[in-house]
Image (cartoon, rainbow, N blue to C red):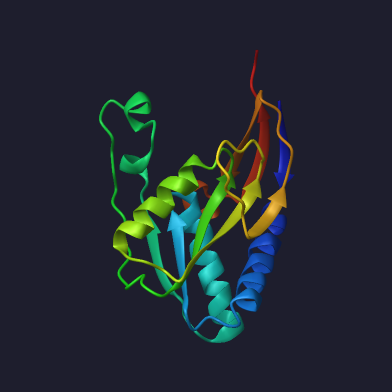
Length: 178
């Protein structure tokens, strides 16, 4: 069973809303760095960054992180991990970093991404923006900016599609077959 949770228009509205909230909370974009988590987190991060430029006329620093080798379960999931590498071509020290991902579930991906960022330096702050918060945390991770919060059962998962990666923006709730 599949159910559309967010269509293209809802995704666009949520990205705009989060960009405005980020600018408001940080009193502008002067000290901001936007960091997406590969893959769809980067797609969303690029759009948030573009929206911030439209709002403020200032381009925040931009980068992405690959958490493949930082996952606590990567050896269980992959025989040979295929890391694509992180790109943070700015000094993270003293920056207000907004880490962006598509779905927040257990919190383990976010913990890994924070570890990657801290390997590059010591930011002033790390904030979290997610398109979908599906609940079910295993770690004490709480997003600062949320596109949509939904309750998801154990036999369901959230599938985010972006036009950059999947040619279409939508968020689908999928029920696994028993």
